[in-house]
Image (cartoon, rainbow, N blue to C red; front, side, top):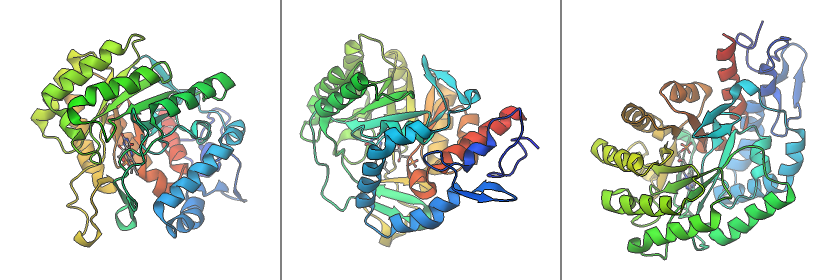
Length: 380
Ligand SMILES: Cc1cc2nc3c(=O)[nH]c(=O)nc-3n(C[C@H](O)[C@H](O)[C@H](O)COP(=O)(O)O)c2cc1C
């Protein structure tokens, strides 16, 4: 038996392939349950059967803050015990070496407080932010809603974050103290709510100036539905100004990416791709949350961006369209909730993938399930 044929969690004992047993480790890399025949089993089910019900019994945002507090406090320790990633998962994209193609999507760690934990959980990269030039509290609560029957989330957080200055200081401290993770860190930038749309470019430039040199790649987020008018920056004139101005400041030639919405029409995407190429961006992130709530029963609808399973097919369609129109690398995100879906995105041409909502529903073992699926392909 090799890793390609071993059932998940059965504990690969092949001397040649160092892979399947990694799924049998919990979030800090310590084995949880030993079964005499199956080996270490069930990190997915431990999350699903014990941790998730506990989490889902409380207010979503309070749980998020609790989890982030835990990961911030224990990340450095978890990192110490984390198993190393199989070298065959690694790849180079826009000049950056990624130890795995599976990353944490923007919005989970807005203030970059838990970078060590993301590495320890097995992510191949983590994207912090969205960071805005000014610190801001975001929209009034409640602003985060679970839809378990759809494995979805609706959020209207509105870029709550500590601002470019505070976050830059934290990143500088991490670098100085040796706490910087060994995985690439992306920095996602957005517009401050109080800044009028006509001054958006200056707002992004302020954040970029403060944070450049502190990330492995940068993302211009013009696609969140929760900052009034933000998605208008996807229009040709505004986008041309924004991309040109930020690239003019990009003296160190950091890879700069654009994150787009799933709700754009094909001609609008074509227009965006032309601008992205003309301004020599390094790639795209496809996609943000959707404002199309038609898959949500009316009684459960909330204002905000919808993510998770209902976004999966639209996000996949947009990915296919984008990769058919450009040779630039694309990071796929949106409704990736299983190893099969992760493989489908990579097969469709994504260079890397990111997850957010599935981390809430499946827990961190999903990362290892994706790694195992990728490795079993290598073996086959
Ligand atoms: C609660 C929440 C907050 C988010 N915040 C941000 C954000 O600040 N910036 C951003 O670019 N995307 C943000 N996103 C979008 C995700 O990065 C991702 O693009 C989207 O959720 C689709 O992926 P998923 O279906 O795996 O969740 C957020 C998503 C959620 C659910």
